[in-house]
Length: 347
Image (tube, rainbow, N blue to C red; front, side):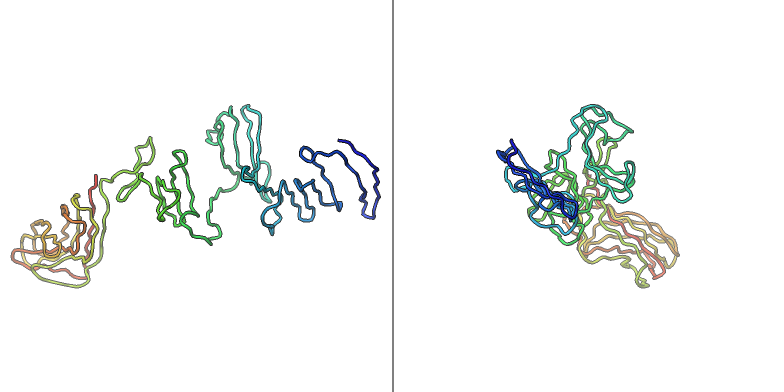
């Protein structure tokens, strides 16, 4: 490259030197020139590098597809389907303690406080302070004097099931543990396209729980007892009779058929008279499921126990507990309470 022609610089009232330099034989593929047209902004040929002094913005390569309303600082863009746009930072030293960082800080920031970084340690890094982030070749997000917050959908203005999730992937990125926008935890999702608005995943399923063996971490397994439903309240009215419906529930109760089912109960009743035999019968509509007998005396009693049974069908449509005595009446009143809890054994 050679410079030819005359150089003429003139001092203006602002102390800036204005003039013209002619440059010949410049190969635009391998060389670039930075220049100012107004004494403030700096440009390169073809705008490969441009600094705009009034808004303090440095543009590398091309301008963005939109003009930001904020003092963005540094921007870079490309329009090439064979190229990716990015910011690259490398520490070429492989020694222990070498690392590369992209750092952020705020008005309180110093070299030791109130900053965060996207970090990568060298191939020969030794673990420091017992921290995972200092492992060799570890890529991490770190902070000092500040919290790390992951906030998808920060503007809360878009609700697609495919967006607004926090995802931790594994198995080569083909599966993920997800916290979705409703705060639900999905384990083992395997459907990144969310076809049919589902997460997929064969690692977890209906009526399974997360368990840990203390070594290999959490995994899906069938629970020993699966909670179905529970009810506890005071009796809605005072009733007496023999037999007497002590508790009833009209409507579908979802149970898995042909699985051991346990209905635990605690019933407060009053026996009018002396010693008797109380029979509690669990019924589905008019059909008897199972029954239990208790020896009781006269007066108030808390009768506790459990029915063990299996349902041939998927639902109990209309179930009740009916009490009967051999000779006396049973009374329940509004000052007494009952409790019902239903489990299934799915092991």
